[in-house]
Image (tube, rainbow, N blue to C red; front, top):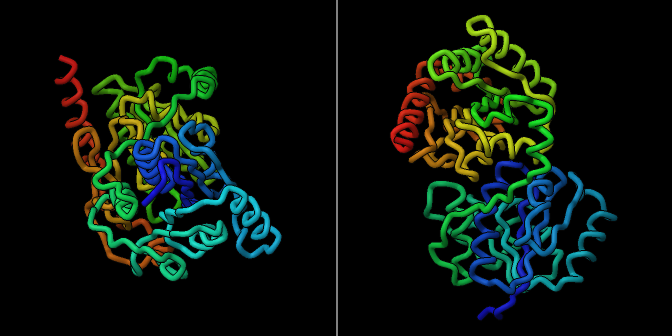
Length: 347
């Protein structure tokens, strides 16, 4: 039996997209236990997703690779044990997330069964859950069943950041219009990237047929080169159809996506921000399975023409042949379907 104000720690340390997909766990915990004291352990990039959450009491930030540094382990242990957490929800299911929970001195630690969680994670958790859902965000929510939270609603509650919105609107005039599409040209793995030229073809088509300009989102220097290639391809057809955005903070990226008419992206962080904020999305999948990472319904559509069930390590190192199997026409059909649906609703 839990007290009305349990002390609960979530361990989901890395990956922007997976952090967003874990937010429903926080929302469900807060809804079930309004007086709970809830903490979260995250690495710096993921912590930026959580920094403005009013439903989170404590945010513990650890540097990447912290587990190999005894001083960092000791620092985290001291910080966590000060708050006497009773329950750990290990949504990541890896050694680093499991050890972070174990360091808290918790009474109960919950993670997935072996195979769904890996490395030392199933050994450090007394309670292990076999997920039955397909979509990852729903699977994370099933970790709450041992706490008596059954079938919680899927909600993300992404707070609006007016300062971030005004900042990017000041630097990119098209953002102020509120009528644009976001094309995210990059991804964390090369195997998840679509061809820049095809993004350019989509941008040109959006402008010529729907009068919707596109903004190109990028993160790394490599992705900036992809954005420039996509812009060049688009402008060769429609000179004023596309803008390459400046380097954005996570907050600026979030607000750019929030106000877009459409987001087109591979399986990476910005896609999951779009889903969380109910921006219409078209997600492009290759080496990862679409049904796991994208809700293919309503205003969210997926395109996947090729899938090879590789191991996680092989997926990271694979080429992007599976993404090349997606033709421009495949994406444009989904564009037509989504925009026609929104026009119908507006009418």
